[in-house]
Image (cartoon, rainbow, N blue to C red; front, side):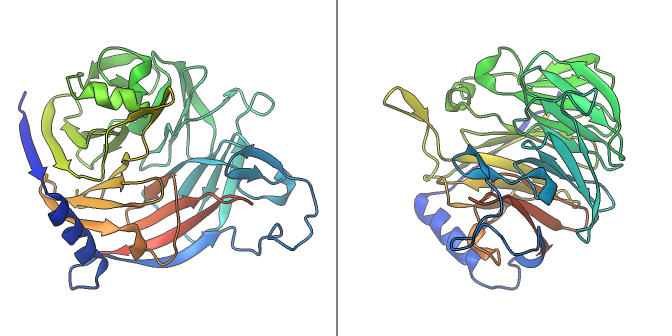
Amino acid sequence: MTHRTILIALSAASFLVSAASAQSPGQNTPMFTKIWKYPAIENPYKAGKASPITVEEVTACTIVPPESLGYLGWVRGLGCDSLGNLYIWDDAYTAVWKFSSTGKLLWRNKYDSSHSIAQIHAVRGAFAVSASGEVCIGDFPTQRLIVLDDAGNVVHNFKIAIKPGTVTFGQDGSLYVAGFGFMYQGPYIYRYSAKGELIRQFCDRDSLSRLGDWSGNTGRLATDRHGNIYYGFYYPYRVVKFSSEGDSIMSISRSVPQLEPPKQIGGVIRSKAGLRGLLILPDETIVVELFTDSTVWGFDLYSPRGEWLKYISGVELPDKIWYRYWAMDPQYNFYFDIPSKEWQEVVKYKFVR
């Protein structure tokens, strides 16, 4: 087992300079170009317009329109296959939506107890899509992983040892899953075969893990084209790279003053800043989604060797958005979900290196 640690420590001043420079146009500054948004129709629930129906409030920021209108309800997962098709997990309708790269709806299937043997109850972010278009959905309450083929048919449905919080496909079709660390003991990551056989556990806990567990958030998983597995802790700032067999290869950490540890306020743990996303680009650039406040976010980019490259502020996007889930296709198109008080939308941007 090899282990190489890369520690990138920046002062508050250097972080702010890096963030500011990333927001200014430059020769090497990545840019985002908006391509499309779904649904690309006028919102009938805007203020001042009569609502044709009564909508039902599900959370503080989400209202689910009637299913007959065909709108997204409550996005809890995004993913893309090698052809650039987009898959969306909709927790409000207990459904998967599949769109072409141009935004055309290809199919939508429901997986609740009335429509499918999958009988999915609720998803908490455990949603992944393989290069060939297989979909893995983690049902949180019943601790199951459900695997679909590219047409949405259930091919595997099995129980696992934890409540799934994040999942990714291995290169051989196996599944890597992690949960919310405070809810179970032992290593964070479980590897299962596509049929549900537990292969191994890895990513052991250490003294830093207690802070991550205390935050009450799950980490994030990602896979590169060689089958290596990456795990990003919510807090503190740390990304660990493993081989497909679970051997530690590299660890990345960075000092960001805006990332404050979880706090106990009035008997409740508050943790508004942390790592909320992890993607590996086709050239193996590592992209870390960093929230420094509940509405202030951006990306850290690292080379495949773990060298910090730059920080990209969220203000570079053509629209001012706050989002929870993201995905990327092999053509460097990024997708973000946009929660709203009326309905959910998904927007597509071209990422130009």
